[in-house]
Image (cartoon, rainbow, N blue to C red; front, side):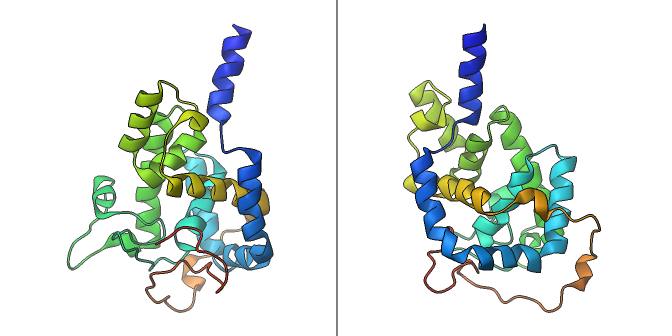
Length: 220
């Protein structure tokens, strides 16, 4: 029974090898101050996301996802028509309650899109039995693709799965970012009203954490 439990836990905690995470950390390390500044700049939104993650009983580390997806630019649009803070595609957005039409696109609404994204993440987290890595893989590559990879491998261990290289990079950067940013320090005791933000960001096809020489955290 003890051996089975250990194997089960190892599957749940499986993530990229340490040297792969370290390589991504080395890419991001020169920009640690700028990345931290993004979290500080958007601290009211970060606090809101952390609170909702707690409400959904999701890992607090998922607050890093908007950094990977859009660098907290709620107006970001990808070539694949993913949009907003969480880079939701239209089908996923509407599936989890957002309006996406010619006249209204709630993917650009910070609060509405966060709610939809967390509903999706909660669904994935339950589907993959609390496996954070598989949840991230499914968020990036699609739940169907990840499930098919598990079925082919007959193994739910992330390291055994055949997944797109973009997804593997995405996951490695997530864990690298988690090594650089102290998520526990992001939760402020006093939530600041979101209305304190001044100005509206312009739509862009690049994550804001580009900093000229830094490769985008993901390719939009």
